[in-house]
Length: 237
Picture 1: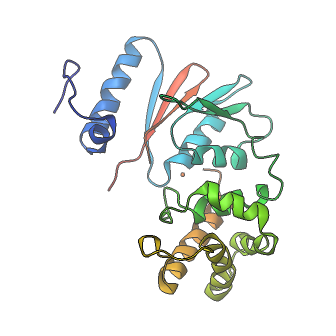
Picture 2: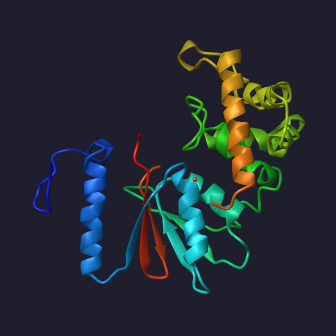
């Protein structure tokens, strides 16, 4: 238990990893912001917090520019995919030490023509809030592979087609996984087994179909909307 006068003796990551500390801190922070006359709306995400953050920004943003602040770069993917052209919403990933602050806009991916149509597929394949991540195989590597490997660019198309059979999903999805694991296999970084790959790809398909058919996705992220602060927090169940 802690209060505003508590001196922390641990790192931010360890402090927020405690499921009791995080909601208490959010409540305390919200109270302080309200005292400073900053309107705060705390929302608990039941599924993927990223989707909730983006959709809330879309809902609350008017003609002014708005900035979503967070550390999860996946928000930039959802920003590009879901934000309408008439909404001026940006995502800012704060820098630290020798890492610069980066600001993304919905047009940040426009220069990557070969990757742009498959952003959500790569988002789910490499891991997001509702799908498991590939160990040591991140989004940057997957993006570079899709940029240089022409024969796998058609594979993601089945992931936006409703009613696809598991065999079709696996056959097309495995091409992308094999491309990502194309180097000599190391025991410390073994690729997924056939069964694990099937389960992972089916979850990716389910995630991709859901995102493609809804306008409403947990890390703790803050959304600054026209001078109002929205915090979306997903509690681990």
